[in-house]
Length: 317
Image 1 (cartoon, rainbow, N blue to C red):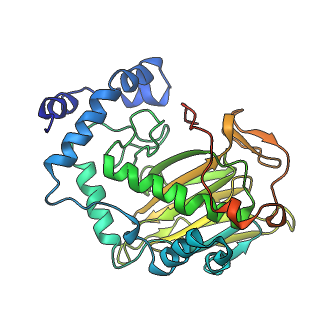
Image 2: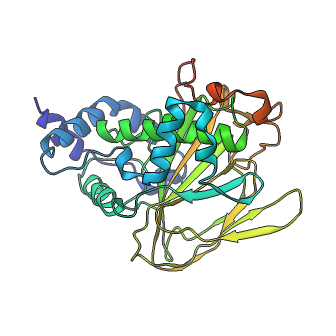
């Protein structure tokens, strides 16, 4: 049964002010925590109400070659090299590949448009301008995007795709039990760049969800190779993803025209533990511990497995 009462109540909520959000006032956290169950019920009701014309996001939205290689590796981890072959190395610890199927990406964007038009309150990342694609994605984040089918899709990306890929390319096995994610939109007149920083993650997957005809200028991303001292500049292309160790310094140039839309997801260990060399600029919640595992010390079967432990109950921000 659709809980229309929850849907109406959620839409009638008064959101905390932008000033309160940016100043991290306690009332903001109280708002999201006090209304968590109501918002979850509202998202469920919204999904049921729109079931006849709403996409059910799943892995068929992703690039067919990547999807096939991932599914083959889950069936037989010894085939994991086919997954690695799809990723191009930019610098050590940074790789890129086609992640979304360009023929299906418009459907996913239409889905996000519908979500953004739902009138159900959702929290954008702190410090990020309130815009259509500013959502917290992980269920442990306050005000997260609690649409049931979206949460299934998000967890499939984290569990079936990102975690084994990060273990294979970046050696993050043992520091990837916990997940985090958000979406962001870069605009010339608001959120236009990011200063040099590292992430509080063992691995970061940054996925561009622009459509092929949605052009933008600027917004190049610099990755700094600490071993050579060189900086490599790259531009996000539609549907492409970049995966990198959180410890790799990177920065985003100002966007000068158009918009860039991205999903950003992290993996890290229990209690925010990240491998040695993973110091970050977001605070003290990234605890550096012994060095990253190498492929030789972890078996393919271990890489293509799910963590045994439970998820914790907090998000980085």
